[in-house]
Figure 1 (cartoon, helix red, strand yellow):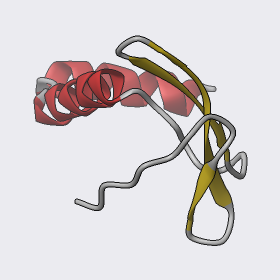
Figure 2: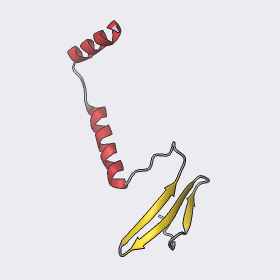
Figure 3: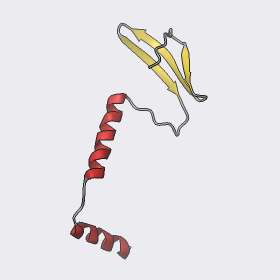
Figure 4: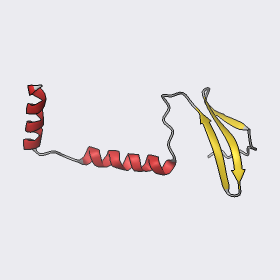
Length: 78
């Protein structure tokens, strides 16, 4: 892990097109701003972990044959 020190209004660059700027420091909280292309997803880590867990659960779920057949029938009738 790279650890950097920055003051308010100072930035770091991630690659060529992602800029992270320190906006404010209050006590033990740091407010940051992130400029990135619209195709780059940005999440707080705890939200990212929840999304990953939900994706794993969804991938592990299996449907029974009857449910699959009904779904296919419905789709084919459209």
